Amino acid sequence: MNAPQTPHALHFMPSAGFRARSKEVVDNPFLRQSFRGAMDFLMSKRAAQFPDPVELETLRTLGEQIRQYNLGKLPELLVQLESNLTRNGIQVHWAETPEEANQIILGLCQKHSAKLMVKGKSMVSEEIELNHAAEAAGIDALESDMGEYIVQLAHEKPSHIIMPAIHKTKEQIAKLFHENVPGVEYTDNVDALIQIGRNVLREKFLEADVGLSGVNFAVAETGTLCLVENEGNGRMCTTAPAVHIAITGIEKIVEKLDHIPPLYSLLTRSATGQNISTYFNMISGPRKAGEKDGPQEVHLVLLDNGRTQAYADEQLRKTLQCIRCGACMNHCPVYTRIGGHAYGTTYPGPIGKIISPHMLGLEATATMATASSLCGACGEVCPVKIPIPELLMRLREESFSAPHENPTMRGQGAGYNATVSAIWRGWAWVYRSPALYRLATWLGSRFNWLMPSKQGPWTSVRVPLKPAPKRLRDMLKERA
Image (cartoon, rainbow, N blue to C red; front, side, top):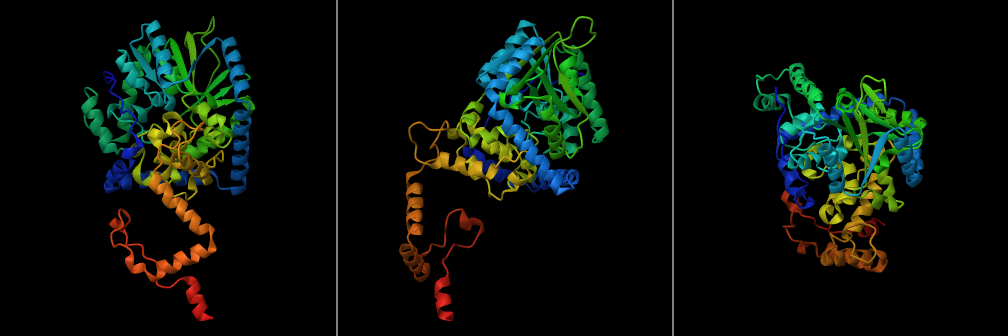
């Protein structure tokens, strides 16, 4: 069986099209049912893992404190990590932008005349659109995570950070395999489909020149890269090829090995409802003299891509506490109805709304922060207590306030509209004055017949807004 040709990546789509893409999904009852069923399943699995609310809150508080402690020492921990990784024989590379990261990775591939790179699951490699860059450089980049492999065959991006192909049915996957994998007959038997994928990938692990993986935790005190996975493909990517390249964001660092068990427990239980993942890989260096397996070279690419912007602001820094479990997405009433592709960004859902503006700028993501009911479910389930609703409010303020000098974020004021801003300022002015408020409500109740019957998108699915003929204060006065 042959590997699929590396497809063109589905590039980032600006948030301006978010509403139209969302409508397409909402109008598709099949997709809505699929997402609803999948999210209900993941929510029940997570709930079963945390039967004791006291234990859950204690662990969440510990996770939050560990992440904040390590972020507070991030600059010095990065220096310590580089020193210990280098001592262990791992070569460290720094990339400020996706372009620099791609240049580093593809440069290493070209140095080794690599033709095939097998990839373990890595959202950071999706973030930099490595597959697209590799294709342009004439290098096949083959996803080895089953979900990633499926969306690669479909020329799509992951719709969920933990379960990339959660939007597809077994029948769609069966058709995809039949049409794209030579010699495969149509079957919608799940076990058979998994075996087909494994057979394709098993051969490629042996042929690949380079293996690429993500990193869940990087331990500064030991210079160790930790990788959490269930399929074993991550271990194959990091051990079978002669060169292993790991890539991660600069925020994934912890000071001590002792910091990992609580975060690991929170990650697997929140993400997939598992007590523990099938594999936990600890990578501490390349193959040493006398060892019979392992890569001859190990590289780590540390990516910024807007993370230092978030880090520089005390409130926005909490965004970097994320351990990428996806629980906020599973519990989000917006995500569960529209899925991940509608967002158009690598990271969808609540976490995508608060991290994407740092990576892409507010000019490209200005409206994402408004795609939330602020119900608070994302913040309540976050295993490291990221105050996502508060951060969404902050991003709304940054997006829609008037542009000013020395902005905190790139693209500040991108969504600013002078008319809308004037309306809200007038609203605030009225509500600050009791006399004006009484006058405004009196006029509204007496002249409610002036309200238009057509009120834009609101009346497309609702009755027109119309003030009551009598105010509450009027009715209370009559009762007295």
